[in-house]
Amino acid sequence: MVTPLCLLYWLLISTWWLMVSTSGMVLIPLTHSLSKTQFTTPHHLLKTTSTRSATRFRHHLHHRHKQVSVPLSPGSDYTLSFTLGSPSSSTISLYLDTGSDLVWLPCSPFECILCESKTPPLSPPLNLSSSATAVPCKSSACSAAHSSLHSSDLCAIARCPLDSIEMSECNSFPCPPFYYAYGDGSLIGRLYKDSLTLPNSLSVQNFTFGCSHTTLGEPVGVAGFGFGRLSLPAQLSSVSPQLGNRFSYCLVSHSFDSNRVRRPSPLILGRYEDKESQFGNELVEFVYTGMLSNPKHPYFYSVGLEGISVGNRNIPAPENLKRVDRRGSGGMVVDSGTTFTMLPASLYDSVATEFDHRVGRFYKRANTVEESTGLSPCYFYNKVDAAKVPAITLHFAGNGSSVVLPRKNYFYEFIDGGDGVREKRNVGCLMLMNGGDEEELSGGPGATLGNYQQQGFEVVYDLEKRKVGFARRKCSSLWDSLKN
Image (tube, rainbow, N blue to C red):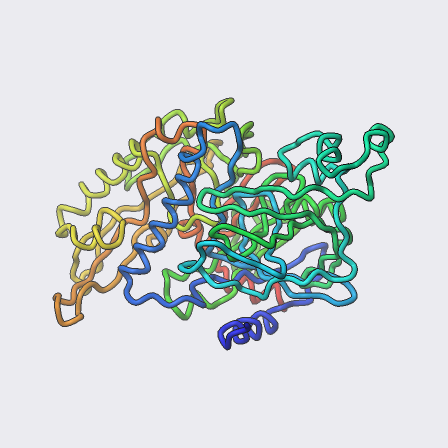
């Protein structure tokens, strides 16, 4: 059943769809999920968001003793849309996720187990078009969906006769159903191929996607943008290397403001830009850091973090954040789907202690707010005299690869109380989180750079040169300039 809220959402999406095709660039609007969600209080919003960030980051703790590679829990902050099928097509909205490598969507009939408290589907379950075809068992895509299981084994599971397997004549036998697990959910699906059309009318024939009729805790499909044979960028590169080998997004600074969060954030496929260039009246200067290979989690965009500065004090990062070992431990994942940055306990404690040393001498700790939001440290302060907080700088691996965070990217200010029970007071919280001890994090990323800290930056993923870049941008202005 399509609710009035869904109809309104589709109306907004339809008005944002753009026909942009200049210099091989494709522009797609990203919509923040908060534009369709209501929270009763800032405390409720922050508690829900911090809990979801921690769950997504710590997902691998539940799987580290298994010999499988489990992606991050699917991101639930930003969505994108495209059409699938020909001649009859359906518009699909999925979560953007740089932490996984599969594009999948709910298909009719669809059942989501234990989804009562989850976000409702963004679009109706897909009815496969007449142009959709099953992916054969004897294909690299089928093998990729089954954790690189040999195609002969997959065709045997699909009941292809032995003589046909030996003669590589199993094209009429479909790829068997696959199981895909996230940190807090899973799904069973089948692979299909169909035409995908992006908002600039670029059509990708034989686009491979997962079609799921049953999921556990996953009511919304995911567009995987991580490294991997089945990710959206990888499939785009087979059609146009210029589009598939580089993408970026610029997340509009919103600070959870209901008006700003409704503005579209540009997702840009294939645009090339020099390290330093003039964009209108805005000087754009990118800071780059190299990607680290992760043998256990090859779909992650991992980078090295050398340290974090609080004011003028540089706090070195632990060694495991500077590299990724052969077990897949370490590094910092640049992630579109985790809201708040997660740090290992030792680094978080040092940063929070230094921050408190500089801020706590002026303002009283808001312990009750810390308990109700999941964030720490928090402080009460006088609005007339804006809270004095030190600058925070992330030092990535590479010469001059430092990123100074805007104040609003790491210190969130809101009103506490004023409900007739408690006094109305101004409060501010540090928006970095404790991800756990290094020993607990063994076998997975050592830290995650969340999308809240990426607001107001264009973040470039250069897959050909294997580097990630950051540049301060006015993302709303960038969107307006590119769509015109």
